[in-house]
Length: 143
Image (tube, rainbow, N blue to C red):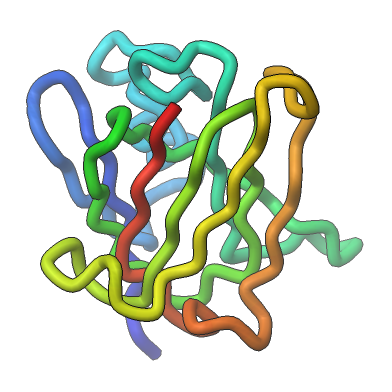
């Protein structure tokens, strides 16, 4: 079985977190709390957040974990098994199966207008049947 890795951008640089780490510690690292950042906001975009799910609880409900990303910068994810992405608030999210070097190739872009999406209005994007089904290579968020 492949080990899942999660990555995050912190004020101190990018970090990669192994999937076998406890979910609480992984969530803290991914959310940026370990680096003093806000748990669910995209840097410089306080009304937006991005979370990914690669697991479900016993009832089958997707369990999401926050991803820290910087405005306009590609974030390397290299994560297998991502089944859904929760995108809250206004902005533009681009997801790709490829690494940041080839991020634009067959990428999926989802845009949320400021008028229709507030910080509490979210869209859950299923990866099933998309180019990121089975592997999320990278993502870029901009606001």
